Image: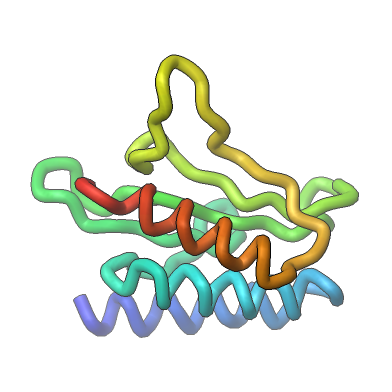
Length: 122
């Protein structure tokens, strides 16, 4: 598991390093936030972008969250998103994807809270 985590993290960091600015700087910070908020997640690439997975007992390695650069699809914002394993449920409707153009301490706090909520009980 440690080798898988180390290899995945190296791949994620390489993808982030290849992003143009300002996504590269934001990506580095997002990576640090995600790893600090949920150290049990394993970094890996998913569709060529950074993603973070959790090992489940009966469902294997599942992507909890991911982010992508604005250049991936020519968008005007980066995207941070969550997959169905993330425990973000609130009633019958809740967001699973967020646009990100800058990363201030306010967004850092919001993302940290989302990550922690997403992995709670997984």
